[in-house]
Image (cartoon, rainbow, N blue to C red; front, side):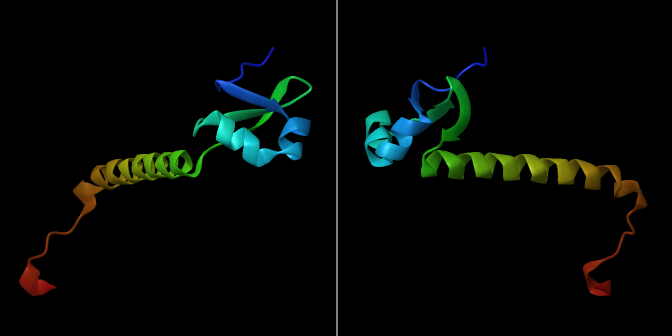
Length: 83
């Protein structure tokens, strides 16, 4: 059985009937949408999605920094006057 990663869940039929009511009832929490008692989607509040997106961007920037740091030995040193 697949784990449901949310305190709130609803069947896809229930979601289709009244999505606004479900969102309100969840009080800003993520809602697992179930199909045949298995999670098929998660309804994530906009602020949570924005926060997750920022974290993912930070992780990607961290990877880019690490990559660039490993290439530092190949860098050519120049002064501001040379630019």
